[in-house]
Length: 368
Image (cartoon, rainbow, N blue to C red):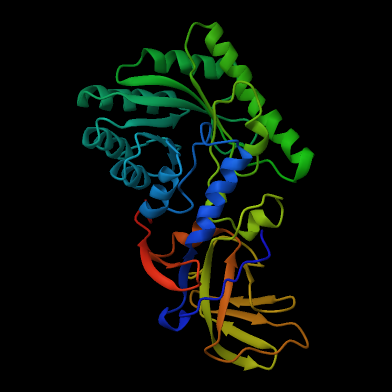
């Protein structure tokens, strides 16, 4: 992260807290940075689960990004409504969600929609609904390359699924999806783990094509591995998401030059002891899903000790010798997990290059 960034908002007195603030110029910097890392945007299919905002999606499109990945039908609808013509929902449509996805295609017939799947009965049900509605959806096999969260086993089981999808009415086999969320570390060891995980999908692609089935796409990697797997012959696209706003969860372990572009404005609401402060950003204000340390503070010196955390309160012990903030003082928080932080808010206060809040952007696809 560049050291020349001043996160202090000049007219912060107009922003109620806790509040999500987005620094527009830093978002633009991050878009340029990922383009530099990947030598352009041709192989980038960014995941929008992090920002969930029409305005940010349009910034990505304006930069030349033409295809997108998302997690929910609501995010897919946002993309289609804002001009995206290639939308991949990286989540298997199950139960009533099938009709939501079918409805998206009916509403936006000119948009290419793709989903993922790893289960034969569910794929057959999806085929039935698509055929009955007179539409076609692209399907990528969700592959288990080591994370063990979802996905079909590599090799023969995935080849069999490809044959199934290729023969089902209303579905079009579009390729393989390989997420490497289990990759850890940094530097060359991290890259090696990411390459090993995705190579499993590339090898399966070869087997599928030997079986006589075209396998046009291998969509691989999130923020932990995109810079490594982009180099692999056979990987057609990479799909990181957190890079757009960045957070300390990745920023403290990965040496990418992205900037923290989304923070939470918080205020001190109580000082119960000389070394204690209580902030108004509790579980409902900033990433409720991560253990302490829940965030970094831009304008609090020294090591913070995270104590009691409730829905609307965060009790912190400040470091010895540090001047204790007063009630009402603004504290700028960098989330540990920005994706779940954004999802807590209906809107973001947008800060311009001069440090002023100038507009508000809707978190259009908040929820599901």
